Image (cartoon, rainbow, N blue to C red):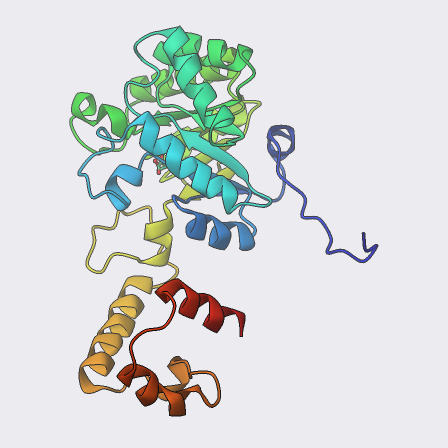
Length: 306
Ligand code: KIV
């Protein structure tokens, strides 16, 4: 083996992520759902890739995250794993995959590691899921919590609303995060939580907090791939999103050009096609006028090997 092989990228691990708690360099997490997404996100140096159950919304076109299945999540997490060299891959456990019983929760969580190669799982909820978090963690599966606006319980919450706005609700959020930490969660996502509340929780926890619509004081930030890149033209944009590109507009423009060029004959040009083997073109009309010799496969093999 060559001693000059390319330097190995340093793979993120749960302990490395935890060691960044309170550090100067905030953690970054972005969602990804396919091999191609993962290659892009990983190449950009993001610390953690979340295969979010937002898959249901942004890839499958559902209105809520509820319909997505464990099967679909595991399938997409495996694709993301194949496209990831350095980031920590976190698979999102879908609605009802961890709420029915603790043994079923462990089995479903295990599928993300065994079948998809994820490094960890994420699940939504606070004090009510603490025992489940404890059991999954004890089985050797790192768990990331998710509190605040938890999209899987949108019906119970009465819509996609900011959580923890009153002192009492904020107190419940603090308790929820402490319960998750005590149960063994290695990090916790806080979604749509007032910045002051997120800051208070971040100071009280020993594990990293990752915010989405939770202000600047968390230990890290997470956003959805499609939001950051502006994949949807005229899509709804939550206030906490910052769009860094307008890929959707660029994509529609590029595809329209393709349509136009095909229709006008500008594409494909000669350089996009292939030529016959030198001298064979002259023999073509003769070959077409004679009965076929040999099989179609013989012809294919002959031309492939030349
Ligand atoms: O599913 C998802 O994308 C998420 C993030 C918004 C945190 O849970």
